[in-house]
Length: 52
Image (cartoon, rainbow, N blue to C red; front, side, top):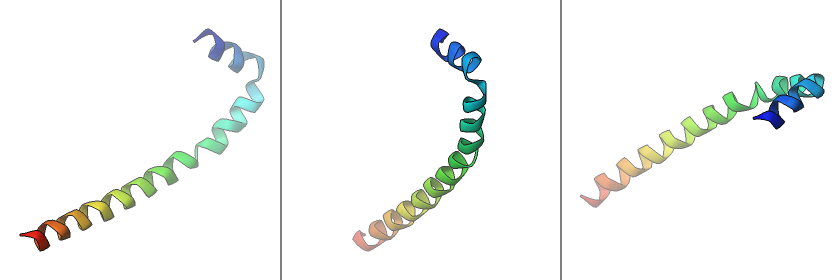
C-alpha cells in the first residue's frame, strides 16, 4: 500500500495518463469476455443437445 501511495504522489501525471489509457481497455476486455462466454455457452448447449 505504501509503495502505491508513494508512486501516485511522486508521479501523478504518468499515473493519470495510465488511468486515462486504461479506462478504455477494461470495457473492451469485458465486452470481449462477454462475447466469448456467450459463444462458449451456445456451443456447450449445442453439444449437449447433439449428445442427447
